[in-house]
Image 1 (cartoon, rainbow, N blue to C red):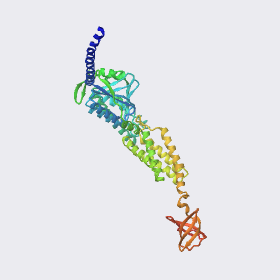
Image 2: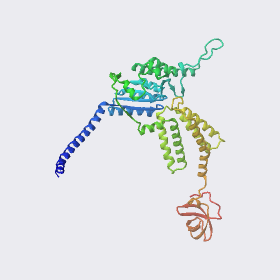
Image 3: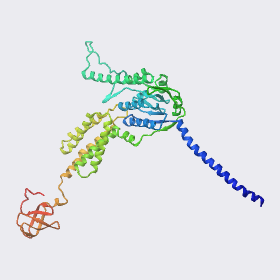
Image 4: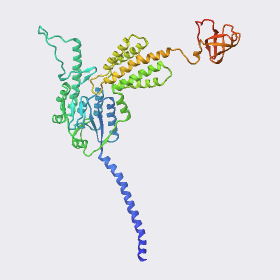
Length: 481
C-alpha cells in the first residue's frame, strides 16, 4: 500500500511536467514555422519562365507577365529557359524591350540538351544579362525573313548573271534591283540591331554579324569559347551557382549577382496566354476564319436558325483578332474571300466548273501568300489547306445547290398548302359562306355568287378566311395571299 500511495503522489508532478514540455514543444514548432518562411524569403528565389516553340505574340505577353510576377514576388532573378526555332520579329523585339526594362537580372538559358536558340532566339540570348546554354545545344541562323519570302542566305548575294557577249556586264532589271535594295536594308538593320546588343552586353559582335549575314550557327561549347555566351551549365542549379558573383549592367548600374542557393520557382502561362498561343497559329486562324465565313453563309441562307450565325460570328471575330497579331499579307485575305465568292457563285450560276475551279485557285493562292511560309513555326500546313479547299468545293457544288433547291421548292405545309385546292360550298349568302376543304370547315369569301354544293378553288387567304372562286373559272393571274 505504501508503494501505491507513492505513485499516486507522483502523478500530479508527471502531469505538470507533460503540460510544461508540451507547451514548450508547441511554441517551438510555431516559432520554427514563422522563422522558416522568413529565412526562405531572405534566401530569395529565381522565377523560371519557359518558352518552347516559335516566338509569337503569346510568348511576348507571357514573358512580360512573368517579369511582372517576379517583381511582385520580390524574386532575385528571372530565368528564361528557351528552346525555339525563331519566330516573329515584332514579338522578339517586345521580349527584348521587356528584358531591357526589367529591374531584375534576366538569365536566358537554352535547354535542355538538344535545344536551340535559332533566329529570333539568338537575338534574345544576346540581349539577356546572362547568356547560358546547356551542353549539346546550339544557336545562330539569325538571317531575317521578309514577308512573302526569305532573304538571301550566305553573304546576302545572289549569283550574278553571266556577262554579255560583248563583255559588258548586263544591267539588272529594275524589279530585281529594288528587291535587292529591300533585302539589303533588312539585313543591315538586323546587323546593326544584333551588334548593338552584343556591344551592350560585351559579347562577340563579329560572330553576331556573321550569324545574320551568313546564317552561321554554333554549338554551345564553341559559343562559350568565342565569348558568344557567358556560361555552359548542365542544370538550373548549376546556372545559379555559376552566375553568382558576376557583374552585370542593370538599369545603367553595375550590379553583382548573388544567385547561389536561390530557390527555383516556375511560372506557368495562364489560360489567356495558352488561348492566344493557340489562335495565333496560322493554321488555326485560317480554320476559324473559314468556320466564321461559312457559319454566316448558312445563317443568311436559313434565317432564324441562330446557331450557325452565332458560332460563325464568334469564330470570325477570333480569327480577325488573331490575324491582327500576325504578319498578314492582306492581298492573300482578299484572294481567299474572292475564292469563296467564286465557289459559291458556281452554285448560283453554273458555269461548267469554271467559277468553282477559279475559286479554288484563288483560295490556294490567297492561303499561300497570306502568311510568310519562311518564318519558323508560322507555316501553313498543306494538309489543312487541301482539306479546307476540298470542303469548300463540296460546299459550293453540293450543299449550296441543295439549299437553293429547297428554298425554291413549293411549300407543302401550313396555310400555303391551301392555295389552288378544290373544295365544296356548304352554305353561301351574298359574298360569304362556309366551304369544306381538307376535311375542315372554313369561312370563305368570293366576288362571284356561289351556291351550296358548288365546287370552288381557293385563290388566297386572309387570316383564317379563304378567298375562293368557282372551280370552273380559270385561275386568276392576280392570285395572292
